[in-house]
Image 1 (cartoon, rainbow, N blue to C red):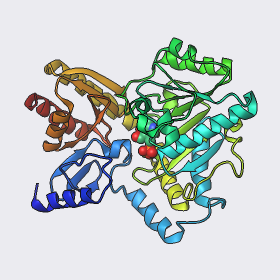
Image 2: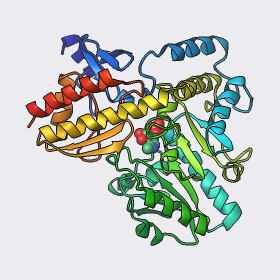
Image 3: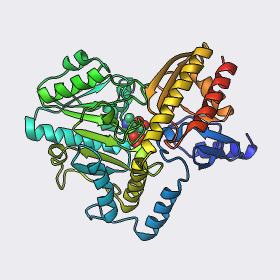
Image 4: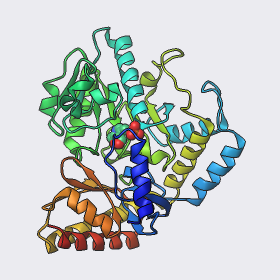
Length: 399
Ligand SMILES: Cc1ncc(COP(=O)(O)O)c(C=O)c1O
């Protein structure tokens, strides 16, 4: 690293609240699936801002949309209709089982919205005492007080308490553990179909079927957090399509903006309808620029061949990793789905991430020790082959 890069890192962290440990790299620019640091070193970006840059970096359609829309209209009161908001909302509704859309600025805000929506729905339809929520061990739903209350980590962070009352944690893929927590007070169940931060566990088909049946039987709102796993990441537009199980509410963010901060909550009419004027809102949510971006990203995801390519690239990646697993004795598990991939290895995770970075591959950690690979959804055979080569080389070099 050059002295200049070190100075930028030191000066930045001098003036930042230290919510993150500094990385020994200053990122400078990106193009497609690659990114460069200020020293000119090239990386294959298989982090993509943690499943954010779905169209990769500097995608021409996105640049065109941002330039055109920024010059036309960026801000107006959230109460106004705009062509951009209509277009983005219609794409979501027309390509899903949902009826109503709420735009947020981030995933966490979407989760807060879904908590309020589910609780108000339960209050209106089931009574004032029905406010409890079931989430899962190893969940991650965000860091605001509501979202943090549904994130199991809150148990190790007592200094932020008290958290939301009435939140219970069940075991992922264990329907009996959910049944044991359900009562007449249960308003909603929140689940990530593929757990992101928790370590890339994938929900079983039978578990999803049972969860839907349980929610129908007990009149509980089923909320899917697709913030990380939705919008093409699993090879389908919405993640829920993979299980053929329809949730009542879905939260989206990350990939829907491909780098631009935007999120959405999409709901069945009965659920979305409970939030009426005065109950919820946001200054920036649904602004014309964010909606224009979201519409452009979604049109790209839905273009002929795009999602097929995600599925084909995913198949190549998983096959290549299986092959690597056979050749090296260091991979202990291959996890995840689509282009949301996890590797457990015998190598210490921080050393592995450092080695990959040194060898030109950006990746992230999930759970206690899982290597997470979330490439841009435009990645193809060439990028997968390059990534597999770097992973194999790094595993061989690292203890
Ligand atoms: C599954 C899931 N839910 C919620 C969030 C929070 O989203 P945001 O960071 O956009 O607020 C994240 C972010 O990593 C996530 O992966």
